[in-house]
Length: 80
Image (cartoon, rainbow, N blue to C red; front, side, top):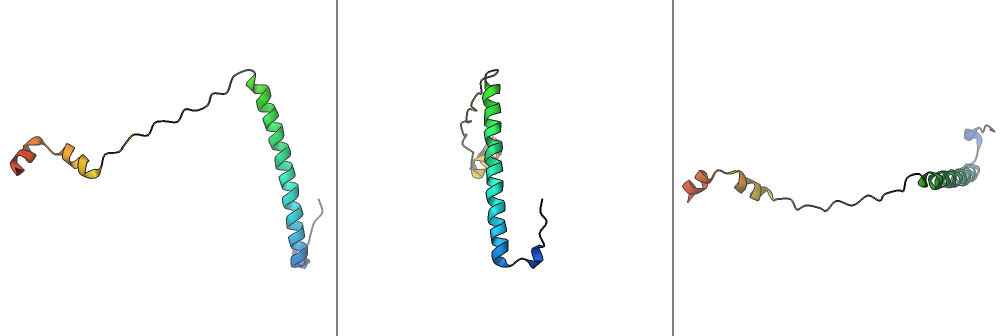
């Protein structure tokens, strides 16, 4: 790998270096992703992939409702 003296490069040269590094990185990521997807295809023949079922959201009680439930019935009767 070529070594660069980054301090001696101009802003334009640094920008070009960044662009070329980003492009090369994207190429390598795409190639690796293709490899992994091919491997998943091979593995899928042994065990089918099951999709996760989303849990049904439950409603939360309000804090004021929690307090009413937690209070003893005697305290409610005395207040009335």
